[in-house]
Image (tube, rainbow, N blue to C red; front, side, top):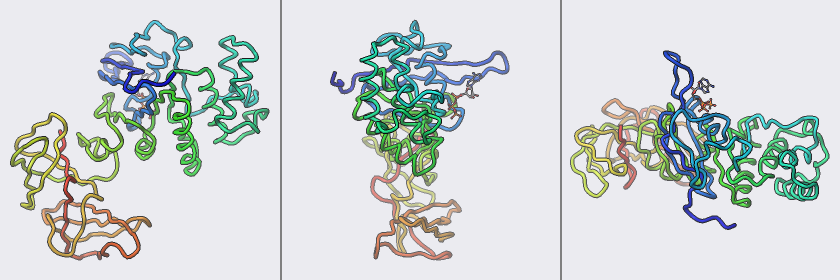
Length: 364
Ligand code: ATP
Protein backbone atom coordinates (compact mmCIF):
# COMPACT_ATOMS: atom_id res chain seq x y z
CA UNK A 1 0.00 0.00 0.00
CA UNK A 2 1.56 3.34 -0.94
CA UNK A 3 2.23 5.60 2.02
CA UNK A 4 0.03 8.67 2.38
CA UNK A 5 2.27 11.68 2.79
CA UNK A 6 1.82 13.43 6.09
CA UNK A 7 -0.33 10.71 7.70
CA UNK A 8 0.67 10.05 11.30
CA UNK A 9 1.89 6.53 12.10
CA UNK A 10 2.47 7.26 15.80
CA UNK A 11 1.15 10.03 18.00
CA UNK A 12 2.56 10.39 21.48
CA UNK A 13 0.20 12.58 23.51
CA UNK A 14 1.22 14.09 26.83
CA UNK A 15 3.15 11.00 27.90
CA UNK A 16 4.82 10.92 31.31
CA UNK A 17 6.81 8.02 32.70
CA UNK A 18 7.85 8.06 36.32
CA UNK A 19 10.10 5.42 37.88
CA UNK A 20 10.41 4.84 41.64
CA UNK A 21 8.58 6.54 44.47
CA UNK A 22 9.11 9.35 46.98
CA UNK A 23 12.57 10.93 46.95
CA UNK A 24 13.89 8.31 44.53
CA UNK A 25 11.30 9.27 41.93
CA UNK A 26 12.64 9.94 38.40
CA UNK A 27 10.52 11.40 35.60
CA UNK A 28 12.16 9.57 32.68
CA UNK A 29 9.63 11.26 30.38
CA UNK A 30 8.15 14.59 31.40
CA UNK A 31 5.01 15.20 29.35
CA UNK A 32 6.19 14.36 25.87
CA UNK A 33 4.06 14.93 22.77
CA UNK A 34 5.21 14.17 19.25
CA UNK A 35 3.75 12.90 15.96
CA UNK A 36 5.73 10.58 13.73
CA UNK A 37 4.62 10.38 10.11
CA UNK A 38 4.11 7.27 8.07
CA UNK A 39 7.16 6.26 6.05
CA UNK A 40 9.41 8.61 7.94
CA UNK A 41 12.95 8.04 9.21
CA UNK A 42 12.46 9.70 12.60
CA UNK A 43 15.28 10.02 15.12
CA UNK A 44 15.22 10.53 18.89
CA UNK A 45 18.50 12.27 19.67
CA UNK A 46 19.85 13.16 23.08
CA UNK A 47 22.47 12.42 25.71
CA UNK A 48 22.52 9.33 27.91
CA UNK A 49 19.60 9.24 30.35
CA UNK A 50 17.37 11.76 28.51
CA UNK A 51 14.55 9.21 28.06
CA UNK A 52 15.04 7.91 24.49
CA UNK A 53 14.92 4.22 25.38
CA UNK A 54 11.99 4.76 27.73
CA UNK A 55 9.95 6.30 24.89
CA UNK A 56 10.79 3.39 22.57
CA UNK A 57 9.85 0.86 25.25
CA UNK A 58 6.47 2.53 25.73
CA UNK A 59 5.79 2.44 21.98
CA UNK A 60 6.85 -1.23 21.86
CA UNK A 61 4.65 -2.06 24.85
CA UNK A 62 7.45 -3.34 27.12
CA UNK A 63 6.37 -0.73 29.63
CA UNK A 64 3.35 1.53 30.26
CA UNK A 65 3.05 5.33 30.46
CA UNK A 66 2.29 6.81 33.91
CA UNK A 67 0.14 9.34 32.06
CA UNK A 68 -0.88 10.22 28.50
CA UNK A 69 -1.51 8.01 25.50
CA UNK A 70 0.16 6.58 22.41
CA UNK A 71 -1.86 6.27 19.23
CA UNK A 72 -0.97 4.06 16.28
CA UNK A 73 -2.81 5.13 13.12
CA UNK A 74 -5.33 6.95 15.30
CA UNK A 75 -5.97 4.09 17.76
CA UNK A 76 -4.87 3.97 21.37
CA UNK A 77 -2.47 1.01 21.66
CA UNK A 78 -2.57 0.78 25.47
CA UNK A 79 -4.69 -2.41 25.49
CA UNK A 80 -2.35 -4.24 23.07
CA UNK A 81 0.45 -6.43 24.49
CA UNK A 82 3.83 -6.10 22.69
CA UNK A 83 3.36 -9.13 20.42
CA UNK A 84 0.03 -7.82 19.16
CA UNK A 85 1.43 -4.42 18.19
CA UNK A 86 2.49 -4.03 14.54
CA UNK A 87 5.77 -2.75 15.89
CA UNK A 88 9.15 -4.47 16.10
CA UNK A 89 12.41 -3.56 17.80
CA UNK A 90 16.08 -3.90 16.88
CA UNK A 91 18.24 -3.73 19.97
CA UNK A 92 21.81 -2.53 20.32
CA UNK A 93 22.85 -6.04 21.37
CA UNK A 94 21.06 -7.64 18.35
CA UNK A 95 19.73 -10.39 20.67
CA UNK A 96 20.16 -13.13 18.04
CA UNK A 97 19.93 -16.83 18.86
CA UNK A 98 23.53 -18.11 18.53
CA UNK A 99 22.60 -21.79 18.08
CA UNK A 100 20.31 -21.03 15.14
CA UNK A 101 21.30 -20.32 11.55
CA UNK A 102 20.91 -16.93 9.92
CA UNK A 103 17.78 -18.14 8.09
CA UNK A 104 16.26 -19.63 11.27
CA UNK A 105 16.83 -16.38 13.13
CA UNK A 106 15.13 -14.38 10.38
CA UNK A 107 12.16 -16.77 10.28
CA UNK A 108 11.76 -16.94 14.06
CA UNK A 109 9.11 -14.23 14.44
CA UNK A 110 7.04 -15.72 11.63
CA UNK A 111 7.24 -19.19 13.23
CA UNK A 112 5.97 -17.69 16.49
CA UNK A 113 3.05 -16.18 14.59
CA UNK A 114 2.26 -19.71 13.28
CA UNK A 115 2.68 -18.79 9.61
CA UNK A 116 2.67 -21.65 7.06
CA UNK A 117 6.10 -23.11 6.17
CA UNK A 118 5.98 -22.05 2.52
CA UNK A 119 5.18 -18.46 3.48
CA UNK A 120 8.01 -18.41 6.03
CA UNK A 121 10.52 -19.78 3.50
CA UNK A 122 9.50 -17.26 0.88
CA UNK A 123 9.68 -14.36 3.30
CA UNK A 124 13.05 -15.47 4.70
CA UNK A 125 14.44 -15.67 1.14
CA UNK A 126 13.13 -12.19 0.44
CA UNK A 127 14.67 -10.82 3.65
CA UNK A 128 18.04 -12.54 2.97
CA UNK A 129 18.08 -10.78 -0.37
CA UNK A 130 17.04 -7.45 1.12
CA UNK A 131 19.96 -7.45 3.57
CA UNK A 132 22.33 -9.14 1.08
CA UNK A 133 22.98 -12.22 3.20
CA UNK A 134 21.83 -14.98 0.81
CA UNK A 135 25.24 -16.68 0.85
CA UNK A 136 25.35 -16.98 4.63
CA UNK A 137 21.80 -18.31 5.17
CA UNK A 138 22.98 -21.60 6.68
CA UNK A 139 25.71 -20.20 8.98
CA UNK A 140 25.10 -20.05 12.70
CA UNK A 141 24.90 -16.45 13.90
CA UNK A 142 27.79 -17.14 16.29
CA UNK A 143 29.96 -17.62 13.18
CA UNK A 144 29.36 -14.32 11.42
CA UNK A 145 30.81 -10.83 11.90
CA UNK A 146 29.28 -7.98 13.93
CA UNK A 147 28.11 -6.16 10.80
CA UNK A 148 26.54 -9.35 9.45
CA UNK A 149 24.81 -9.97 12.79
CA UNK A 150 23.39 -6.47 12.56
CA UNK A 151 21.94 -7.26 9.12
CA UNK A 152 20.36 -10.47 10.45
CA UNK A 153 18.84 -8.58 13.38
CA UNK A 154 17.34 -6.08 10.92
CA UNK A 155 16.04 -8.81 8.63
CA UNK A 156 14.49 -10.65 11.57
CA UNK A 157 12.73 -7.51 12.76
CA UNK A 158 11.49 -6.63 9.25
CA UNK A 159 10.31 -10.16 8.36
CA UNK A 160 6.85 -9.91 10.00
CA UNK A 161 6.27 -6.63 8.10
CA UNK A 162 5.76 -4.32 11.07
CA UNK A 163 4.22 -0.93 10.42
CA UNK A 164 6.84 0.68 12.64
CA UNK A 165 10.41 -0.41 13.32
CA UNK A 166 12.07 0.80 16.51
CA UNK A 167 15.87 0.89 16.47
CA UNK A 168 17.65 1.42 19.79
CA UNK A 169 21.22 2.55 19.08
CA UNK A 170 21.58 -0.34 16.61
CA UNK A 171 24.95 0.77 15.24
CA UNK A 172 26.80 1.66 18.41
CA UNK A 173 28.57 -1.70 18.75
CA UNK A 174 30.13 -1.39 15.28
CA UNK A 175 33.48 0.19 14.48
CA UNK A 176 33.53 3.56 12.70
CA UNK A 177 33.84 2.32 9.11
CA UNK A 178 31.23 -0.39 9.46
CA UNK A 179 28.91 2.05 11.20
CA UNK A 180 29.16 4.41 8.21
CA UNK A 181 28.35 1.51 5.85
CA UNK A 182 25.39 0.41 7.96
CA UNK A 183 24.04 3.97 8.08
CA UNK A 184 23.71 3.91 4.30
CA UNK A 185 22.30 0.38 4.47
CA UNK A 186 19.66 1.39 7.01
CA UNK A 187 18.57 4.34 4.89
CA UNK A 188 18.27 2.01 1.90
CA UNK A 189 16.22 -0.53 3.89
CA UNK A 190 13.86 2.15 5.14
CA UNK A 191 13.42 3.54 1.63
CA UNK A 192 12.86 0.12 0.03
CA UNK A 193 10.44 -1.20 2.65
CA UNK A 194 8.54 2.08 3.23
CA UNK A 195 8.30 1.17 6.94
CA UNK A 196 8.32 3.99 9.51
CA UNK A 197 11.65 3.88 11.37
CA UNK A 198 12.07 5.36 14.84
CA UNK A 199 15.79 5.46 15.45
CA UNK A 200 17.47 6.23 18.77
CA UNK A 201 20.98 7.65 18.94
CA UNK A 202 23.14 9.98 21.00
CA UNK A 203 25.35 10.61 17.96
CA UNK A 204 24.45 13.95 16.40
CA UNK A 205 26.23 13.26 13.12
CA UNK A 206 24.36 9.97 12.72
CA UNK A 207 21.08 11.79 13.37
CA UNK A 208 21.84 14.58 10.89
CA UNK A 209 22.90 12.29 8.06
CA UNK A 210 20.15 9.68 8.34
CA UNK A 211 16.92 11.31 9.47
CA UNK A 212 13.95 12.90 7.74
CA UNK A 213 13.20 14.57 11.07
CA UNK A 214 14.87 14.65 14.47
CA UNK A 215 13.46 15.16 17.97
CA UNK A 216 16.15 16.52 20.29
CA UNK A 217 15.61 15.32 23.88
CA UNK A 218 17.01 16.43 27.21
CA UNK A 219 15.99 15.43 30.75
CA UNK A 220 12.79 13.66 29.74
CA UNK A 221 11.57 16.42 27.42
CA UNK A 222 11.51 16.95 23.67
CA UNK A 223 13.06 20.37 23.09
CA UNK A 224 12.75 20.68 19.32
CA UNK A 225 11.49 18.64 16.37
CA UNK A 226 12.53 19.39 12.82
CA UNK A 227 14.43 18.38 9.71
CA UNK A 228 18.21 18.00 10.17
CA UNK A 229 18.61 21.37 8.45
CA UNK A 230 16.08 23.08 10.75
CA UNK A 231 17.72 21.65 13.83
CA UNK A 232 21.23 22.55 12.73
CA UNK A 233 20.59 25.96 11.17
CA UNK A 234 17.73 27.10 13.40
CA UNK A 235 18.26 25.67 16.89
CA UNK A 236 15.63 27.23 19.16
CA UNK A 237 17.33 26.57 22.48
CA UNK A 238 20.85 26.66 23.86
CA UNK A 239 20.90 22.92 24.58
CA UNK A 240 19.98 22.08 20.97
CA UNK A 241 22.56 24.49 19.54
CA UNK A 242 25.24 23.15 21.84
CA UNK A 243 24.47 19.45 21.50
CA UNK A 244 24.48 19.54 17.70
CA UNK A 245 27.69 20.69 16.09
CA UNK A 246 30.00 23.48 17.12
CA UNK A 247 28.44 26.81 17.94
CA UNK A 248 29.33 30.37 18.84
CA UNK A 249 27.15 32.11 21.41
CA UNK A 250 27.12 35.90 21.58
CA UNK A 251 25.24 38.23 23.92
CA UNK A 252 23.05 40.71 22.08
CA UNK A 253 20.57 43.51 22.69
CA UNK A 254 17.31 43.45 20.73
CA UNK A 255 16.80 46.76 18.88
CA UNK A 256 13.70 45.95 16.81
CA UNK A 257 11.64 43.02 15.54
CA UNK A 258 10.07 42.67 12.12
CA UNK A 259 8.57 39.61 10.34
CA UNK A 260 10.40 36.86 12.21
CA UNK A 261 13.71 38.70 12.26
CA UNK A 262 15.35 40.98 14.76
CA UNK A 263 17.92 43.73 14.51
CA UNK A 264 20.38 43.23 17.32
CA UNK A 265 23.44 45.01 18.63
CA UNK A 266 26.36 42.85 19.73
CA UNK A 267 28.68 43.73 22.61
CA UNK A 268 31.23 44.98 20.08
CA UNK A 269 28.68 47.58 18.95
CA UNK A 270 28.12 45.84 15.58
CA UNK A 271 24.52 45.64 14.42
CA UNK A 272 23.39 42.47 12.69
CA UNK A 273 20.13 40.86 11.66
CA UNK A 274 19.09 37.55 13.33
CA UNK A 275 16.29 35.00 12.81
CA UNK A 276 13.78 34.37 15.60
CA UNK A 277 12.41 30.95 16.60
CA UNK A 278 8.74 30.55 15.49
CA UNK A 279 6.39 32.65 17.56
CA UNK A 280 9.13 33.94 19.87
CA UNK A 281 9.28 37.66 20.68
CA UNK A 282 12.17 38.54 22.98
CA UNK A 283 12.80 41.96 24.42
CA UNK A 284 15.90 43.38 26.02
CA UNK A 285 18.78 40.93 26.11
CA UNK A 286 19.13 37.71 24.10
CA UNK A 287 21.70 35.17 23.03
CA UNK A 288 22.58 34.84 19.36
CA UNK A 289 24.05 31.65 17.91
CA UNK A 290 26.28 31.54 14.83
CA UNK A 291 27.71 28.36 13.32
CA UNK A 292 31.49 28.52 12.67
CA UNK A 293 31.06 27.95 8.91
CA UNK A 294 28.56 30.81 8.61
CA UNK A 295 31.19 33.38 9.55
CA UNK A 296 34.40 34.37 7.82
CA UNK A 297 37.68 35.62 9.19
CA UNK A 298 39.19 38.57 7.32
CA UNK A 299 42.41 40.54 7.69
CA UNK A 300 40.64 43.90 7.72
CA UNK A 301 37.14 45.09 8.63
CA UNK A 302 34.38 42.68 9.66
CA UNK A 303 31.44 42.92 12.09
CA UNK A 304 33.49 41.99 15.16
CA UNK A 305 37.20 41.70 15.79
CA UNK A 306 39.72 39.87 17.91
CA UNK A 307 43.04 38.04 17.99
CA UNK A 308 43.71 34.53 16.64
CA UNK A 309 44.40 32.16 19.54
CA UNK A 310 44.74 28.91 17.67
CA UNK A 311 44.54 27.48 14.15
CA UNK A 312 43.57 23.80 13.89
CA UNK A 313 43.89 21.93 10.60
CA UNK A 314 41.27 19.18 9.96
CA UNK A 315 42.08 18.13 6.40
CA UNK A 316 38.87 19.28 4.71
CA UNK A 317 38.70 22.47 6.75
CA UNK A 318 40.55 24.63 9.25
CA UNK A 319 39.19 25.97 12.53
CA UNK A 320 40.37 29.44 13.56
CA UNK A 321 39.79 30.13 17.26
CA UNK A 322 39.58 33.85 17.95
CA UNK A 323 39.56 35.74 21.28
CA UNK A 324 37.15 38.64 20.72
CA UNK A 325 37.92 42.10 22.05
CA UNK A 326 35.13 41.69 24.63
CA UNK A 327 36.85 38.56 25.98
CA UNK A 328 34.52 35.91 24.47
CA UNK A 329 35.80 33.23 22.11
CA UNK A 330 34.61 32.68 18.57
CA UNK A 331 35.43 29.89 16.11
CA UNK A 332 35.40 30.29 12.36
CA UNK A 333 35.55 27.26 10.08
CA UNK A 334 37.08 27.73 6.65
CA UNK A 335 37.18 25.19 3.84
CA UNK A 336 40.56 24.04 2.64
CA UNK A 337 39.90 23.93 -1.11
CA UNK A 338 43.14 24.27 -3.08
CA UNK A 339 44.06 27.91 -3.56
CA UNK A 340 41.08 29.03 -1.48
CA UNK A 341 40.97 30.84 1.81
CA UNK A 342 43.37 33.05 3.63
CA UNK A 343 45.75 31.53 6.13
CA UNK A 344 45.92 32.93 9.64
CA UNK A 345 48.51 32.79 12.37
CA UNK A 346 48.35 32.77 16.12
CA UNK A 347 48.48 36.31 17.55
CA UNK A 348 47.21 37.93 14.36
CA UNK A 349 44.45 40.56 14.57
CA UNK A 350 41.43 39.65 12.50
CA UNK A 351 37.89 40.73 11.77
CA UNK A 352 34.89 38.41 11.53
CA UNK A 353 32.24 38.86 8.87
CA UNK A 354 28.91 37.35 9.92
CA UNK A 355 27.07 36.08 6.86
CA UNK A 356 23.54 37.12 5.94
CA UNK A 357 21.07 34.79 7.60
CA UNK A 358 23.83 33.34 9.80
CA UNK A 359 22.59 34.48 13.20
CA UNK A 360 19.74 32.87 15.13
CA UNK A 361 18.27 34.06 18.41
CA UNK A 362 17.77 31.47 21.17
CA UNK A 363 14.70 31.16 23.39
CA UNK A 364 16.78 30.77 26.53
P1 ATP B 1 20.91 5.83 27.19
O1 ATP B 1 21.36 6.55 25.96
O2 ATP B 1 21.97 5.81 28.26
O3 ATP B 1 20.30 4.50 26.93
P2 ATP B 1 18.28 7.03 27.40
O4 ATP B 1 18.18 8.40 26.83
O5 ATP B 1 17.79 5.92 26.58
O6 ATP B 1 19.77 6.76 27.87
P3 ATP B 1 16.50 6.06 29.43
O7 ATP B 1 17.10 4.71 29.47
O8 ATP B 1 15.20 6.20 28.77
O9 ATP B 1 17.52 7.10 28.80
O10 ATP B 1 16.40 6.60 30.94
C1 ATP B 1 15.81 7.85 31.29
C2 ATP B 1 15.89 8.04 32.79
O11 ATP B 1 15.05 7.11 33.44
C3 ATP B 1 17.27 7.83 33.38
O12 ATP B 1 17.44 8.76 34.41
C4 ATP B 1 17.22 6.42 33.89
O13 ATP B 1 18.11 6.25 34.97
C5 ATP B 1 15.77 6.29 34.34
N1 ATP B 1 15.26 4.90 34.22
C6 ATP B 1 15.12 4.22 33.07
N2 ATP B 1 14.60 2.99 33.30
C7 ATP B 1 14.43 2.91 34.64
C8 ATP B 1 13.92 1.89 35.53
N3 ATP B 1 13.49 0.73 35.06
N4 ATP B 1 13.89 2.17 36.84
C9 ATP B 1 14.31 3.36 37.33
N5 ATP B 1 14.79 4.35 36.56
C10 ATP B 1 14.85 4.14 35.23
